[in-house]
Length: 312
Image 1 (spheres, helix red, strand yellow):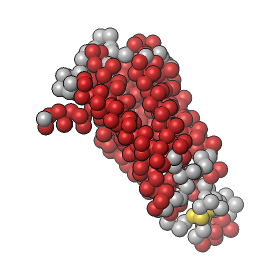
Image 2 (image 1 turned 90 degrees about the horizontal axis):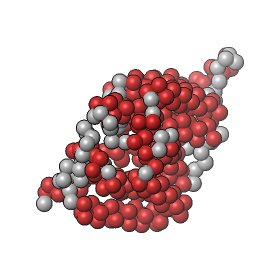
Image 3 (image 1 turned 90 degrees about the vertical axis):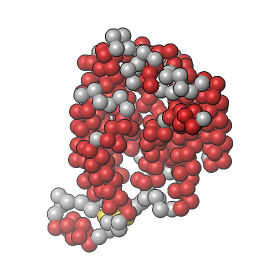
Image 4 (image 1 turned 30 degrees about the horizontal axis):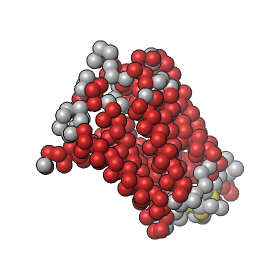
C-alpha cells in the first residue's frame, strides 16, 4: 500500500510544478506581490493549474505506457514499470481534473476556461499532436504562455505587449531546447520513442534555439526599456540631473545582462544534451540558479525596495 501511494505521487510529477511558478509573474512584476488578497488568489490558481498539469501527465503516461518501456529514462515511470495499475491511474486522473476545475471555477471564470482549454490541448497532444513536428513545439510553448496568463487573469492584471512577446519567445526557446536534448536520447536508443523527433535535425533545432534565444533577450530588453517604473530615490534623481546619458526610469534594464547570461548558460546545456527536463536543470545547475536568483533580487530591489515608484 505504501508503495502504491508513492507511485501515485510520482506519476503526478510534483517536481514539474516548478513550471507553474510562472503564474506569479504578473503579480511580481506589477508590484502587487504583498497584496494579501491577490497573492492568495494566485496561490489557489497555482494549486489548480498544478493539479491540471499532473492530470495531463497521468493521461500521457497511460497513453504512452508501451512506448515508454523502450525509453532509457521513461521506462522507470510508474505505469511503464508496472508499479502502478492503470485503473488507479485513471481514478487519480479523474480526481485531479475535478479538483482543479472546482478550484478554478471558484476563483475566476477566465481561469476556468483557460484550464479547460489547457486540458483539451494536452489531451490532443497526448493522442497524437506530439508526433507532428513543429506543432509539438508550439503546443509545449503554449503551455508556458497559458501559465503566465492564468496568473494575470486571477488578479486582473494588464500584461505589456513586450512582456507577452518575451513570454512567447522564452516558451519557444524552452520547447525547442527540450526537443534538441531529446535528439541525443533518440540516437542512444536506435529509433527513439517519439515520431516527431525523426523529423527534426540537430541543425534545424539549433537554429530554433538560437532564433528564440535571441528573441527572448531582445523582447525582455524592450520590456525593461518601455515598462520600467520611475525611480524615486534622490541618488537617481541627482544622477539624471548631472547627465542626460543617465535616466531615472530605466532601472529594469539592469536585468538585461542577467537575462543574457541565463540564456547563454541554458543554450550551453542544450547543446550538451542536458535540457530534456528544464525544471530539473533550474533546480540543479548552479549557473542557472545564480542567474535566476540575481534576476529576482534585482527586480525586487527595483520595484519593492522604494527605489522606484510603480505605475507612474
